[in-house]
Image 1 (cartoon, rainbow, N blue to C red):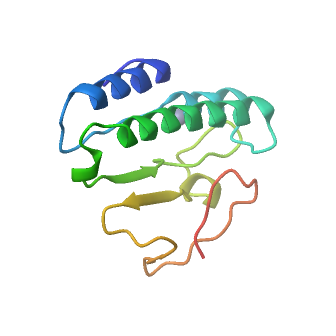
Image 2: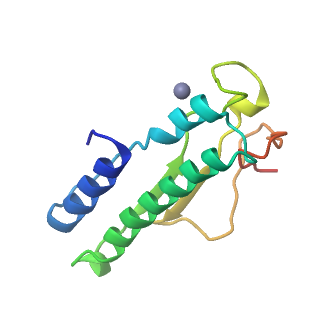
Length: 134
Ligand SMILES: [Zn+2]
């Protein structure tokens, strides 16, 4: 599904109302654009507004899943992550701010609150813009 983030969310909603897919992949890209424009800073109101917008889109998608006609006989696994963090107004480097990402998994056989970590320890970013596991 392509388009701006509003279109991606709307198309996903419509798809979830009418179609049966084994996998649905969505990418909300406008937050990255906000990071480039305003900086990847948790204390920047424009960047926070962009985060809120993605949160609303994710809420719309998750609500659409929960309202599916056959939801009681379906087994959804939802994974949310990002492909990178950011530093100042860029990314692609090796800093923790750029390389630390969050991973949210729910549904399926996921056990609430359980964390299974890779062999590496992850540390917090200094600007608070990324979530971490310890
Ligand atoms: Zn980018």
